[in-house]
Length: 306
Image (cartoon, rainbow, N blue to C red; front, top):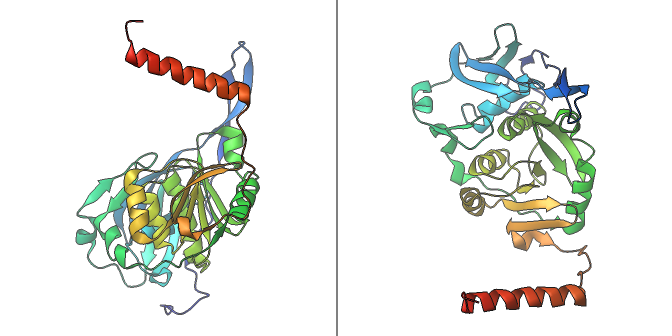
């Protein structure tokens, strides 16, 4: 078995990624038949040393990284060096992970499972929470100009979404550069695949950002924290539990990020506002209309019989 300090170690992997989309015909709003593309979706059952763990519904483009990342973010395994091989067989819709020395305590690890809000239903096992609150994430300053540059650059990626829709995208970023970008039918799958690639390629979280097109739930915050990534960015919204967990773990949480707009839900002190857009003054005509609307509303509340 390779040692934990071996930075070049990689388990034996198949390369069994599927095509992300399939051509089909559909009829449009004026009755014409068109060829369009739809996203793939396939079940993939994960086995570890012959034991069935879970069936994931996935696009199938990064199955080996997905399996490795799932084992990482669920904390079934603690080091990539524990994995001997990862073999995907689409003929029986399986991915079989073999470890060097087995995994102890499977019954304890699997005894409690929480179904989450993940697209296609994500899962969190009891072992996922082990030592979660002992994680120490670095404090990273985030330039507003970098947020804008990253949002602009990441628009160049969503290839499958542009072609077929029906997928979420996740990215590992450093400054405005996109280091990894993965799309899948569920944002939790895309996040796990990135976690897998980070493990396989020995990429640290450190000063990186994690971007997702999906909502920021507690599950996503947990995954990002376990990757050691201190900054979480989304074009979507947040959940209350996701925000609470980000506060407890020290994850800088930025959401509703599109164009020149964003909201910082946690880690406001880490944001450097170096590129503030000009304040857009409300025109006098619009201001007058707003005042009149407000006046009418107040009058209606005071005199409902009017």
